[in-house]
Figure 1 (cartoon, rainbow, N blue to C red):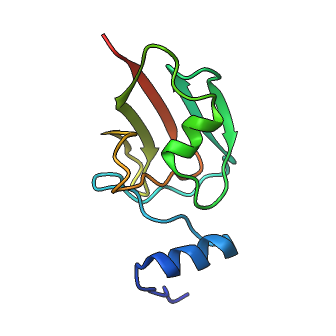
Figure 2 (figure 1 turned 45 degrees about the vertical axis):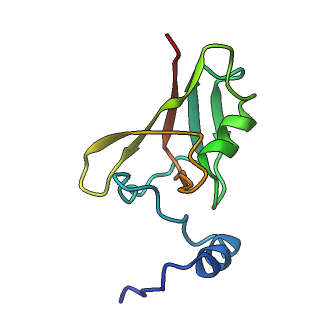
Figure 3 (figure 1 turned 180 degrees about the horizontal axis):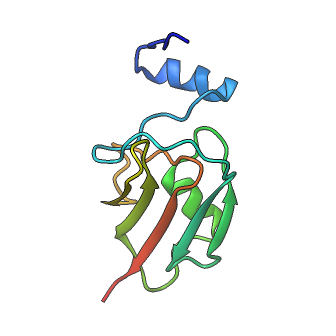
Length: 119
């Protein structure tokens, strides 16, 4: 099957997310996800209600944290780690900031989000 290359523009991602074919790319350093049968994203650490969230195309990091009740009193908005299994079998951990609205962090099925504590 031939791979179809689409331009990486917000309009294309909005249309593709609406159709449900793929999630927009993650931030620099967060690779393409490996295929998985998981239907959830796991949000752990210093959030009010840690646990699994049902993934949907276009799920963004800050939205997942809000759906988990938001940061608890110790939650560090600048110390969030996203763990993702990659196509080549590696497990990659990328530290991101939940305050950086300029570069959204799109989550994929099977991602694990961990909010570290402020010390």
